[in-house]
Image 1 (cartoon, rainbow, N blue to C red):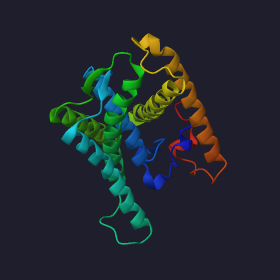
Image 2 (image 1 turned 90 degrees about the horizontal axis):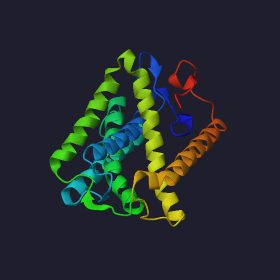
Image 3 (image 1 turned 60 degrees about the vertical axis):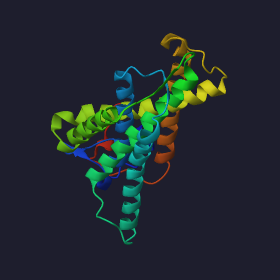
Length: 234
């Protein structure tokens, strides 16, 4: 099902134990980074925080997003035999993707919290540089584990990518559903948001299925022998 999210080109993907991961390196990094951001906000007890990072921390999050844009633009120039800064490589695609996903997640989660919770807290998802460094360390650790490529990590990493996609789509869908139904700031507890959460999961499955169908109707899938030739862990 994740073939609708990523083209799954072997040349742009990480392999673990000879098997291709379900998302290309940059895309996989973005969703893993987003998952890291959500985990970080949860650990800090700020799921009700309604403010994105302020000042320099906010700029740092945007800079993390810009990193993958710069790397992607450099790769585009390289693919077109145009002047570029460096030779693109899979490790940079993964690491800059992780950085971007972390930055997006730290900015997006409080925006959603501000419309879901009846009593959102007037604080940011991260409030000092050490917290951001903690997020970068977590994302860096995830990147290192992926790049080490130990066989036993194949399914844990693949499942983490699936979870990252589900969480990122789900967060965005929850925001849309709450606004569309006019139920902003009505949830006092997680149980109160149950309807929106279930709807967001259902919408996510529909979106992923639709994207996969569109991809299948297009160019041929990657050759056999890659992870994408096996059933995705969804």
